[in-house]
Every structure is written in C-alpha cells, then in structure tokens.
Image (cartoon, rainbow, N blue to C red):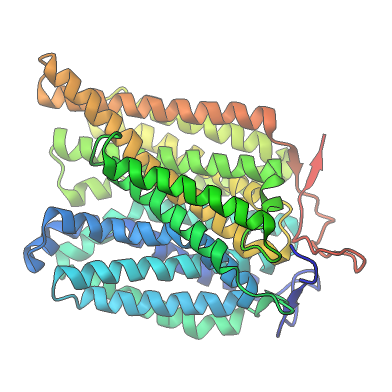
Length: 506
C-alpha cells in the first residue's frame, strides 16, 4: 500500500489485535447468512424461468439475461467493491450494497415486463459485488486468533458451496407452492434484519486515506476488463469460440486488464497495488479457487442436464437430488477445520482436490441406463465431501499475509476467481460436452447416448483439472500451519499491519 495509509477503527471496543471480540461468532452467523442469500440468488431463479417467461412474455434471450445479468455485474464489479470497502469503511459499504440488493429484490419481484426484471437483476449483481467483499473482510478482521480464523473462513467458504447446490431446491419449492415473485421478495426480510443487526455486531474498520483519492482510471479498466471477460465466457456457452460475440469481449477484456497493469504500476495510490499479486501462496490459492469453482459449477450444470434430458427428472426433483452434495460439503468443511491445525493447509487441500476428482470420475461413468442411487448419488457425496475439505484451506490460503488495509481487495479477488471459475465451467465444460455429443450424433449414436457421452467427457476433463491443481499445490504451495500463539496483532514498529498470518514452515 502506498505510504501514509494505516488501518483505522472508528468504534471497535475489541478490534483485531486488541483482544477477542465476543460478538464475532454471532456476526459470522449473520454475515454468512447474507452471503448464503447472495450465492443462492445466482441459481434460485433457474427453475422458475418457464413461469417467468409465461407471465412476462419473455424471449429466450431475455431469460438468459435474467440469469447472466446478475453474474455479469457480480463478477465485474467485485474488485471495485472490495477497494471501496477498504477505503470508505467495510461496514458502511456492506450496508450500502445490502440496501441496493434489497431495492433490486423488490423491483425484481414487482417486475411488470422483461426490461424491468433484467435491469433489476443487473442491480442485484451490483449490490452483491459491493457487499460481498466487505462482508468477508469484516469476518477476516473479527477473528484475530489464527485457529478461529481458519474455522471462520472455512465456514464461509462452505456456506457458499452449500448455497450453490440449494438454489434450485429453494427456487423449486417457492415457485411450486407460491408465485415466482417470492423468490425475490423473500430476500427483503433477510436484508432488513441484516441492516438492523450488523451495526450492533460489527465495528467499522477502514484504512486512513490521508488525502488519497479513489483510483477511477484503475477502477474503470479493471471493472471493464472483468465485465468483458465474464460476458465473453457467458457467450461462449451458447456460441462457438470463434464467434465475434465471444472473441471481441474476451480479447477486449484482456487488453483492458493489461492496460490496468500499466496504469496501476505508475499510480501513486493504485486501486490494486501490483505487489498484492507477488505472493506465491496467495496466487496458488486463487488458482485452486478458480479450478474448484469451474469443476463444481460445471458438474452441477452437466448433471442437471443429464437428469432432466436423459432420466426425465422435473426441475424440482433435479434440484432435490443435489441435497447430498450440500450435506457432503457441510461435513467436509467440519472435517477440514479440524484437520488444518494438525496437518497444515497444504495436505488438506491436496486430499480435497484428489477426492473431489474421484467424485467427478465416478459420476463420469454414467450411461443411459444409470440410476440415481447407484450412478449419481455416490459421486455427489464424494464430490461434496472433498470439495468441502478443500474449501477452508483454499479460502485461508487466498487470504494469507493480507494486510488489514487490503482485506476487502483480497476478499474481492477470492470472489472474482469463484465467479470467473464458475463462468468457465458453464462455458468451456458445457460447450465441450455439447460438441462431443453432436459429433457422436453424426456417427449415428442415439440422442440420449450422444448427450450422455458428452457429459461424461466433460466430467473427466473437470477431474483432470483438479488433479493438475493438486500437483501445482504440491510443488508450489508453502507448508502453512496455524500457530495458536499468533494473534494477528502487529508490533507498533511495523509499518504495515498484517491481519493474522499463519506460520510458514519449510
């Protein structure tokens, strides 16, 4: 961080490094529930799309933007939201994002035409992008003891994984029993409760700016680059990779991010300090987070297609079938937070990656005669268990040696990797499955057989990606253990405050 920036706490009775905040676990429960809502809203709408189409007379392209608009804004604005939280106060920015999300939820539920719903979904994504990095930043600072922080960040990562599997279940239950509009209205009491309780449970924290101004040039290039890349990946799920609708945004996004690097290297107060990316351990953590999200979202979408198109499941039955994944994640997170203090982060992540790939490989053995109990559920349980095992270590690695000034930025980077990884899973893996299936059709295979072989191939590719990541972790990640003696409190002589580092050993 540039010279002259130090962390500031406005009203903290027991800020990180100054004692243990007795409110921390209640605050984690509240913030985690809000994050759970954010993640669910990415997928909760999927099963209600047919009813939305009938009520509002939407085209298929319009329906796609009901889903993609949220993802596009949430992924593209995360870095900006994270830096806003660092500069202007994490609690303040979190509450601002929650208000935006609440307003957008009301207008989504009240939508009278397709344009109103699509705009509201874009606005929901903006609210999440502003609030989510601030929320994880607050969690990171609330837990000053490294052992507690491992548990807290691990629980946070596990909640996101569980929410990703429960979205279709919640959406199906609501849409079947009431109106699809309640998929959005149900967010309102959650956001109101959060706005009331957060000031009581979380103290404000921010860096002192001392004349610093927000780096708007860096903000525009970073946000524009991420939005363009996410848009290009979303388009790749529906078109060929050579289509201009895919190539132009992808190349434009890469060019904008390259321009951002040049701008930030010369900025006196950069939006994203380039030294932030110099830490090898964090870089590996971001890579693993991207790969896990790619495999997980790809798995979820491919298995959903298989269940509905080949096995004839209804959307609600398909959503309910993913409950074992959520249960596996919950159990895996619990195991992981107990294993990390004993074994260290590195071996737990490796075990998680290898186990998750085994779940993918098992599921890839599906055929048109597959049954849920024998061919799908075991792979779901294994994938969920080992995905949950890998998530806490990955989340803690991605936040390793992060200064208190940069917690919002680090949280945003972790979320960006998850968003981009999810977009990659939905575009690359699904596109590969569809193309291989079409090639099998051309060779005379029955439609169901061709589709199944395409899904199986992509699941095996996802497993290979996780195995490659396991090798990268083995070779590149430091051995990190949690030292119970560390409290995260810096010495007064330190120029930059580090928010609770795990201890590297060699």
